[in-house]
Image 1: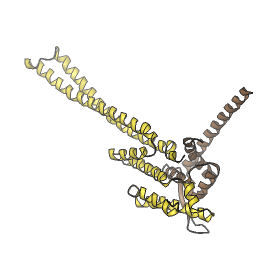
Image 2: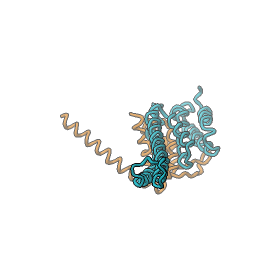
Image 3: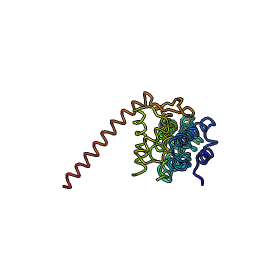
Image 4: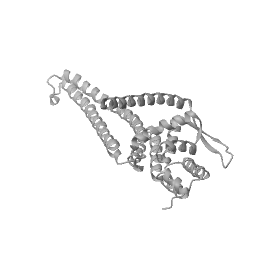
Amino acid sequence: MQQTEAEYLRILKSRLVGTLTDDELADVLSDYSEHFRMGKANGRKEEELFCSLGSPEDVAREIRATHLVNKAESDRSCGNLLHAIGATLGLGLFNLVFVLVPFILLVVLLFVVFILGIVFTVFGPAAGIYAILQILGLPAFAIWQSPVAGVFFSLGITTFGLLLVIGDYFLARFSYHLGIRYLKWNIGVITGTERVA
Amino acid sequence: MNIQFKKGVLEICVLFVLAHKDCYGYELVAAISKRIDISEGTIYPLLRRLKDEGYVTTYLQESAEGPPRKYYRLTETGRNVEHEQKEEWMRFVASVNALLEGTHDAAD
């Protein structure tokens, strides 16, 4: 591979086109072409500048991850979050353990709490209806020892189920917010230059 | 030196240099890589993040030779952050040095 300015910019561009907007891409490329221009004005060779900049693939990965995390922050959606996490995983094997595993555990937890909430929310009213029918004197529905207690019990179960679902929603929102902050910190401090060592 | 260690410190270094004076990209990179051995290309993504966070702004300024250059300047927020991190850094380094001197004494 030739270590020239043109090659450096070509790699950056090929890795970032499609992710960044045209304006952002032009801005990134202009930073690096200015760097080459200033370097050459200071008497350094293109090859030398290329080497001290380090791998353009790593730079592109870092810019891409930052961009996708910002996007997931400003425009909350599952798709955007998955893209951001995917890009962060590309920053180093390390992140399989420190990003992917916590993410999967969290998703499982949120899912289990949601299902529990739904189950209670559905079973509560059903048990309540049975209790009311029993109070009305329909023996076919006589499942409660004390139907009056059954009414209160089912009210309790329903409320608990609804609280679980609502709580889960806020927990998901909070995790999203916290997750984005963690990914930003991860990109800034932990990963990115890892491969250059 | 440990690469992760360096990366964490890089942000502080950029803030310190910019607190001293506004710089264009190449100037900033040169100032830092003169002292710290890093891959220079990663400073630009860092500057981009600092700009996203609102710690720095950029402006174009004509230069005597060639096209205008992009200068980076600390914002008010950036200046406050720089101030805090500088104090934190000083305390940290003082503590580590005190520890080092402590072990030195013990070895004598």
